[in-house]
Image 1 (tube, rainbow, N blue to C red):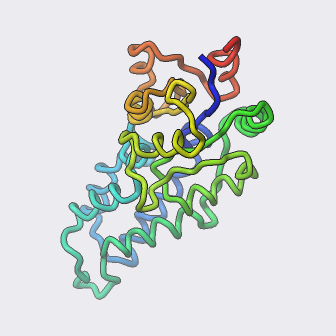
Image 2: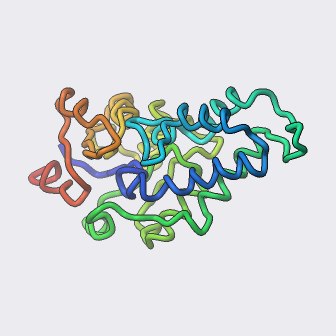
Length: 244
């Protein structure tokens, strides 16, 4: 085995999931109620559907693993057909929700907290000649905003995101595009992620997989499927890349 390319999930793998997104989604729900006229009952239903709690997120939540488009579609199932609320508030449409999520993902409360050892590990892997990529369910604009804030955008040569072109994980589309762009075989690629969707994405592509252990995921399933599990990507070389 000779790994040449390493692809990372973003939220929960490179950046701290709850610290980055909990306040953002709290603000989104507040605006949906105040500016768009959703009832408290509708907000509660959307929160439950999304895996959002007042203290954090449920394990393997919709917000954690689903592309933005899917989140919006499921929210619209709760809200109903596009309409203007009787209160005279803003009309709620898929486009309006998309713009709302995008705006808050880059707002002043969208502070990005890297997981331990992320910045130095990415730099080190890049300097060693690995081709690095990100594959995420988040939007392209939000992802670029996150990596720019961390100052690591130049290390990544591939970005697969919910941009209307790529099919979302666990569909292998983004992994296939990565291999095609850099002329790599699947067994030359390592994928690192923190969700069951990430594990399935790696399997569907024939990639090697390393799982991140987190409080919001079911990392035990990684162990049950005989995949290495690490606390953060600083442990990646010792756990998987040593001696390859």
